Amino acid sequence: MTDEAQQERVDSIAPATAAFEPADASARLNPAGGAAPTPDAAPATPAVDRHPPTGAMSAERLAMKALEARLLGGERKLRRREVAAGAGLSLLSARKLWRALGFPNFGDEDVAFTERDQAALSTVVDLVRAGKLTEEAAISVTRSIGQMTDRMVVWQIEALVEDMVHEQGVTDAVARKRLVNELPALVDALEEVLVYSWRRQLNAGVQRLAVRAEAGLQASEEGREGDEDDAPLPLARAVGFADLVSYTSLSRRMNEKTLARLVQRFENKCAEIISVGGGRLVKTVGDEVLYIAETPAAGAEISLALAEAFTEDEILPEARVAMVWGRILSRLGDIYGPTVNLAARLTTLADPGTVLVDSMTASALEHDDRFVMIPQAPENVRGFGEINPVRLTRGRGKGLVLD
Image 1 (cartoon, helix red, strand yellow):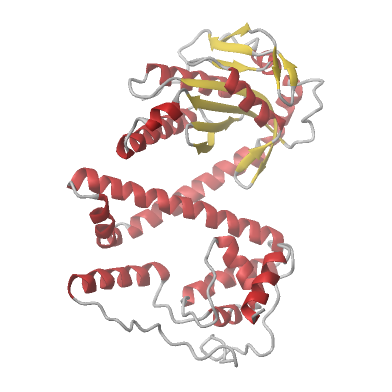
Image 2: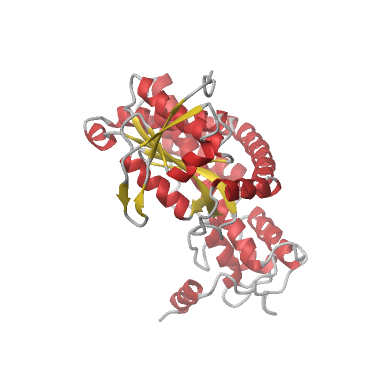
């Protein structure tokens, strides 16, 4: 087994909670802040393109090189051991953080990093060394950044490409090439909005997940008195699912562009209704959306609005919707627990264009005249036994008001 393969094996089985290891004595820092050359790490030199492009290809590569330097903060000049040593870490610990960010593996001779990579690594390590984060928390937070930004940039690139195809009348392939030249004009603005949104979302998240958590737990005790199955879970939330009817058969008959527009229309409409109702869209999986709200009433309003919106939509099919009020565990940007599972099971029982809740959720809403509950026949639900579904319909009021 080669040294590289052996290191891969060690990294793959090393626990995520293992301490960040400091760089060994051989990784000496030079006055410029880099690592002194070691036997297995030759002095850093920029990668050389042995086949310089010509003509139009040259312009494309030059544009990509300029964009990369701008996004990465400079030219790639450092190898992985140099970056790790510069941050005062062993290579093993540095690679744990890089993997958490979702970066690919690089070999010892790959000139793949910039000084900004070293600075970012040092930022995370300094939080641990200052006692502000444990090593396990640092890796988890880093992983959240990597996974969320990866999905975000894919979404943004596809949105820009689709817009160019539609507005400029070019093919998908041409639009992807043009993106390299058009993106530089957007980078600063997108970065500014990203930081702004993160701060707003962080503030809202602290309010939702910390400041108001106790009130939600008290409401859960009142709404689910005597139900101890999910009592140990920390947060009380209304959990809902909306599932498009006949999506699979529809998608088989659609071309790529039509299917993309249908999915985008579905997600946009769900996101708008859920946000207006004060809820949070947890995730979308194809033809299904999972959302939460802080109170049974908010969850009910969102659920009814979703069912009504898809029933009235001229393009999208109807949706089955279900909502359950109970306790959940919130981890890794997702939610877990029996409440989530029950809501998913109820969704499959709902008729198109209707909303189902369970009997305990109905009890939490029964004194609110905005809602009318219609008991349904008992159903045997896998994992829950016999339950009593209740159809939720609108009572007094207009419900959510959308633009």
